[in-house]
Length: 90
Image 1 (cartoon, rainbow, N blue to C red):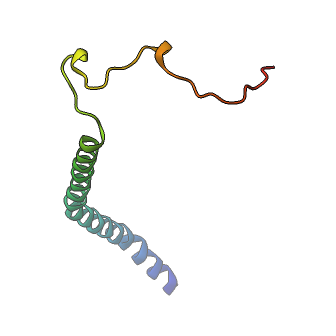
Image 2: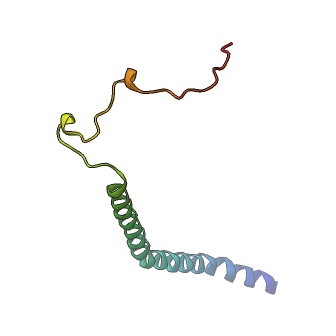
């Protein structure tokens, strides 16, 4: 009969202990979340700035008019094709 009293005490205190543990978990996550968000935003800003700098150096300069280009795009018939052995077309 002693086990019944122990079982009743455990059943009565289990919701209290579970609720206390859940509240501690929520408080810990809520405390850490702003720092996690700050790190994620910082990573995004650094990655975007780095990509912008890389693309700025790799892409040609933009001009406002297509006529002002240093190297105009040739028409398709002016493009020279490589000469080589002709393949038989099936």
